Length: 244
Image (tube, rainbow, N blue to C red; front, side, top):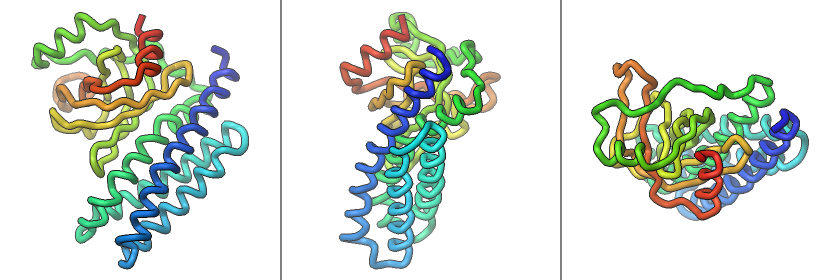
């Protein structure tokens, strides 16, 4: 795929991610307005979310650079909002609105990061460092690695579990799961929703569970191996095309 064609596909993915994130944030705004925006913190959070929604609307107009800029704007504001929700004394707000804000961040992060990468004209590496599990991985992981074809990719991952948002880099993708390189791995057994963009611009959103974790002292990239729980037929077919 040419650079121009890739940018076009990434723009489409960015616009689609912006629309999906807006739908999630609409729930957050309704919740904040109806139940918890009577507090000063609640009003401040609602204002940030509204600003993010406005940026996501504007992401539908313009060239890839404009889409990237609006996604960056929205991600910055939403990151501030999520940080405020995790502040002491915001438990009710965090429980109610936190998962929605985290989900919206996970939705837009892969498209934003890949647009930034493409517009810097630095092609993704085709041979990222090995991310195979250490020998301590469970037998189910070893079996999955033997039976599922894998492809080495490099791409941004956005993951959400409850009110937690995790950004990382994907590698070793298969139809059964992938490795997420991140300095903030989630505990084994954590269920999460994650999104990524395949090299052709196809957006994948799957429910998954953390199967194993690699710490910072294992001599390789820190992160977590995740196993897919629910994958749409369309996403499974797209992953299979790249894993052959």
